[in-house]
Image (tube, rainbow, N blue to C red):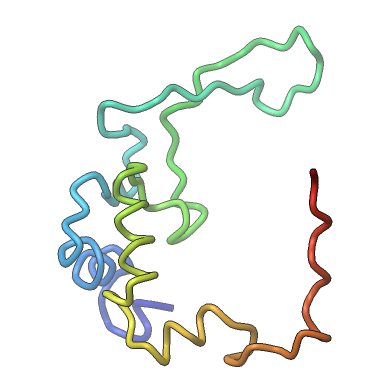
Length: 122
């Protein structure tokens, strides 16, 4: 949807609006390159084999662009924390838009329409 609305790629628009202003140095868009920036954890997979003795493979490097924008970004925990802080503080979105993002259909439903509170332990 981003290219249709802006004429720029998702990576370009996200970099312009979020990554640069927040100085997210550990966030990148690798495109179709399967390599991950270092340092990074190693991911392991049985590649959809369900038997307990299935061979385990290093599945760290993958081209996840088939997921669209969701698979085309790599970030660090620190950058995700910085993004979350900026969203909560209102550094990225105007107050009205931020409120619409945090409520159902743009308004807070009455208590009777909300899910019941979770039971408390202890």
